[in-house]
Amino acid sequence: MNGFNTDNPILALSILFVVGYPAGLLARKIGIPKVTGNILAGVLLGPSLFMVFDDSAAKTLKPLTVFAMGMITCVVGGHLSYRRLHNALKRIGSFAIAEVAMTFTLVASGIYWFTESLPTALLMGAIATETAPATVLAVVREEKAKGLLIKTLLAVVALDNVLCILIFSLIKAQVTHFLASGEMAILTAMVVACKGLLFSILIGSGVGALLVYLVRKKKIEPFSGLFMAILLSISAAEILHASPLLTSLTLGIFLGNSGRDGESLVTSLESLEPVLMTCFFTLAGVDIHLDSLGKFGAIGAAYLVARFVGKVSGGAIGGFLGTDIARIRSNIGPALLSHAGLAIGLVVLLQGDPDLAAANPKMIEDITNVVLASIVIFEILGPPLVRRSVTRAGEAGKDRERIVKFIQEEYIVTPLEAEDKWDAIRQLAAFLIKTHGIKDLTVEDLIESIEEREKSISTAMGSGVAIPHAKLPASGPDIMGVMGICPAGIDFDAPDHRPVHYIIMIATPKAHQDRHLQVMAAVARMISNADIRAKLLTAQTPAEVYEVIEVEPSENYNYFLED
Image (cartoon, rainbow, N blue to C red; front, side, top):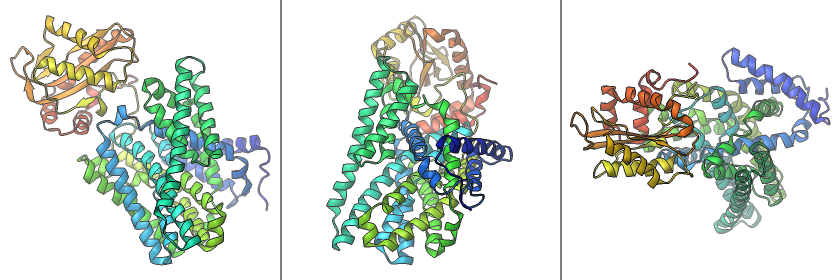
């Protein structure tokens, strides 16, 4: 039986959405992620079962797939914002490097054991390092998750894909040269890889700069602008033979580091996401061929087991090197197992290389069979594992608006070393301006406002707590604040004459002054807890400070506004 004729892409999209959307809702109702429901619906529609669609579906709807992947990688890239990650770089870098290194080493070693083909082993090791950003992001959004694990996970996924593309480009160039000449050419491989990387960076950054300029000048709406930017980035990358995914990722990274205007741009296509995600994952299911499982064999089993062990053990090693927070160490590895978009793209790239196909067709066939079969397994198991990690870490349902929004890792400094309270105020004011990305207020103006209030009456409350604050004449997106922990203590003219160890600085723009007292009261309730104060003094990093505040019954003081 032949599949459905997909020459009409609008009709094909309609079928994907009409079947995929209720399948996602049903999946959610029975306790599994919507993404899994979408994928399984696609499998039912595909050539493996009911054959509603044939193998031409993916080709006909390639523009949808390419744009969806571009949008997803752009959003993931936006999470690599230095403003948000500045005090988490060690943790994120440790996870990404350890997990990629372990996965590459174990998969390459396992494949070489069975095939005795170094080119095959190295290429499959490189592909195995990929983590599917679409799957991870979809589950995170579905679970409304937020916290240290999510912040770390999304950044690691972005770095995973950057490292995967770099490693694959290096190895592919090396393998191509080796199969043609029988000689190693490391320098040639590096030049080829760096050329592709450079083009991706230049395109993504250039388009990002143009987009930010046009939006700031009000020449284009954010929604239309980002839509145009993603299309332009992908098109330019394909013309210049760069990676469309790495280009979109670079676009997201550029926007995420272009101030609050750029950060808000990254999310301007959110209204499109439900439809795009549903069609994208249902189409991904259509493209899954269950008969590929029959070609799995010992090589496939080695790939599957080695990748699983590499991701999980690499996550554990990265956690040991980068963080003392157990719930992140134990949950991030399984959340990185999803395997799809970029991996499929790299396989297609190998299939389309005439030099490799002519030199070693069996190698291409083995890689194709094993990777595609493993994707069937990882894309069905991946979403529930991401959800399990998010739930076990206690971060599901936390992406909701709270009364105090600045209780986050990136707004915490510890230890704060200051000569006196005026030095502490100056340091925290500069930190607040920097971390909140404020453009229309200078550090000097903020310091002057806070010092003026401090000179009239001390903001120290006793019990080692001070809350210096200011009401700003400037507009702003919300009430802003930072926290500094001073283990040595500072004389702050406290009413109980005790040194201050905990300083929470608050800056309230004029548009939000009706909530100023509410936020002040919430912060005061939090820091009045003697147990929290004792634990804060022993915390070694901003992440540990955040953990102390968050694992306590934080809803008692920092409640969700919708509750």
